[in-house]
Image 1 (cartoon, helix red, strand yellow):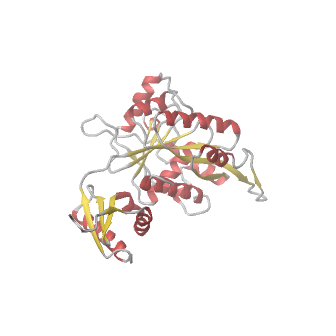
Image 2 (cartoon, rainbow, N blue to C red):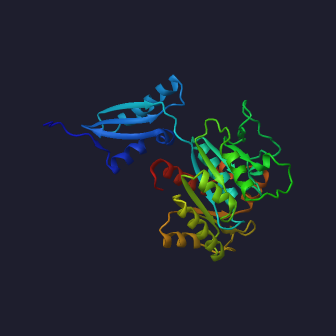
Image 3 (tube, rainbow, N blue to C red):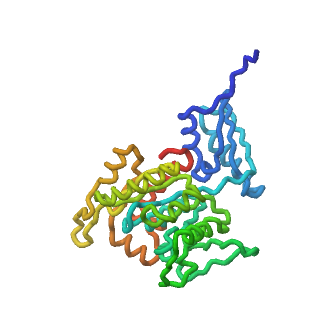
Amino acid sequence: MNNQPATTPLLDADEALIRAALSPEINHRLRSARIAMRRAVIVAEAGDLSDSGRAELEAAITAALDVLPEIDEVRVALIGERRRRRLIAVGSGKGGVGKSTLTTNLAVALARMGRRVGVIDGDIYGPSQPKLLRTEGIKPTATPSGDKLVAIDSPYGVKVLSMGHIVAPGKALAWRGPMTGKALTQLVDADWGETDLLLVDLPPGTGDVQLSMLSAHRPDGAVLVSTPQDLALIDAARAGQLFEQGNVPIIGLVENMAGYACPHCGEISDPFGQGGVETFAAALEIPFLGRVPLTLATRIAGDRGEPPAAGDDETAAPFRAIAEKLARWLDTGTV
C-alpha cells in the first residue's frame, strides 16, 4: 500500500491565494493548479507564445508564487494547445438602454487589462460600433483565400467587425431572418487574429439574430443590460429567459442610465428610476454587475468615438469595475 500523501486539488482558498498572486493575463492562461507536500504544480496555456515568451511566462509564475509562505517549490508546465475563442453576448430586451456603449467600453476596459478582445456588432439593422470605436469608413479586407473577412483594428486595442463596415453608410437593409443569420455567421467566423475573447453587441429583443446565435454560435455567457424602469426590466427578463432556454449562463445584470448629474448645479436626478435592476437581480438570484450613470460626457465621448473606458477619469470607473467582474467570471466562473 502506498503511504505517500495523495496529490489533491487545491482548496478554494488556496486557489484564490494563488490567483491573487498572479497577474490577470497569467490568470487568463491558467489551466489547472495542484498542490502536494507544499509543491505547487501549475499548468498554463502558451501555444501562442514564442520561446522567449514561454520562458518569461514561466519565470513570472515562479517569481510570483515563490514568495508565498504556503509553497516551498513551484513547477510550471506549459502546454501548446490553443484555447477556444470565447464568446460573450451583451443583450437587452428593448432598445435605447445603452447596450452598445456598454459593450464598447467593456471591451476597451478588458483590453487595457491585457485581454485580447474583439467586438462583433450583431445589430445588423442598426450598427453602432463603427462610430463608437472610431472605425467609420474603414472596409474590412479578406483573407488570402478570400473566404473570410479580416477584423478591423480600432485605435483602442480592440478588433471590431460590423455590417456598418460593409454596407454603405445610411443604406437601409431589408433582409429577412435567414440573411441576418448568415451575416452574423460571417462576422463570427472572420479572421480575428490572436483575439481570444469576442463580445457580441446584440440587437434588442429576442428575434432572428439571437436565435441564430444560440443555434450556430452558442455564447459562453451573457451580460444583460437594462435601465431601472419596470418596462425595461420586463423586457430584460424576456431576454434572460431566451438565454436560459439556450443553456447560456447569465453572467449578471447591469443597470444603465442610473442617475443624471446636472452639469450646472450637480444635483442628481433619476429620470429612469434607481435601483430597479439590482432589486430585480436579487429577486432572480442573478449577480448584479454594477450601474453606469447617465452623463453628458459619456454621450459626447460616444459620438466622438472616444470610449470613456480608454481614459482614467470618473466616467471610466463604472465600466472598469464591471469589466473586472466580467474578467473574474472568465477566469473563475463566478463574479
